[in-house]
Image (cartoon, rainbow, N blue to C red; front, side, top):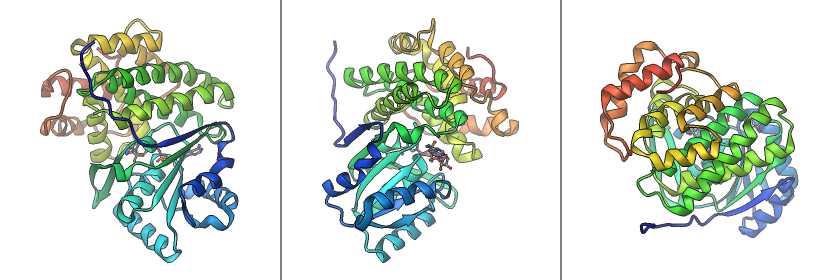
Length: 352
Ligand code: NAD
């Protein structure tokens, strides 16, 4: 084994079934007196349920979280936080809601407790993506990382079947790229392989029976492992492409990850044989890109960028943006090959 550097993330994780019931104790543990609860408009009722559990420790519910963490929403939420005299946030929802919690915490220094209800993984990362006038910027700081995360399997039982599949593939993408990251290390590689295996087992079972509690448990556990990968090591081509496509063409987050993942993996396959062997082993497949393609089909994920509403005349622009600034990737980034990758993803071809 060669040497490595591993930095652990200082986050407390409470995992299980029915763990939401511990929210008041966990808020107490953070020494938060009055927490502002954050949700999307669609998950407002869940915010009310948390408020009931917190009793006097709830400052109120702010249900304005939306995709891509726009600065205007954060500004409004910070105003509400101050007006209500809140000294902490509880973000319950997917990556959009957790992103708002991070954006508030990094501006005000309040403690954060995150309760994820998708598999996207933002809760375990010190990374914040924000948009201002349509432009997305990303920053990294330990001040952004939630101090406590409650994973409750119960909360994922109602995650719609389609979003379960694409969100699970979004999680797998973090683990795939962790295996060939420039700063890869054996601890994270072990998390990555276990995370892919747990999700690969669980997602087809969830597609068949969304209320399958054992499969939901596996999926959320896998999502946590993959989230640690995302927070711990640098991502590469796949995340870059999804960032470009989501930011420039407003494509949906989890679905875009699902479509791109087999193709980005195929692109890197010749340059990362060890990672590919581990991914294939975790998937129980003959080869990594083919296995990811088949898993995506098995969970009924969208087949192509075209199906997500990507305009055909945007492919050149996407290729240009993807090669504009250099970033670490196992295989050199070549525009013609990236353009060909995007064309295959656009058409929904099997990766090659
Ligand atoms: P999301 O948070 O936007 O949620 C999508 C929709 O599903 C929302 O309407 C939400 O209310 C609903 N929803 C969530 N959980 C549900 C449940 N259990 N049952 C029913 N409905 C539910 O989607 P996402 O994919 O979780 O997050 C995407 C966003 O998170 C993107 O903006 C992405 O950039 C960001 N993200 C950031 C990081 C990071 O490390 N900074 C990591 C992953 C994702």
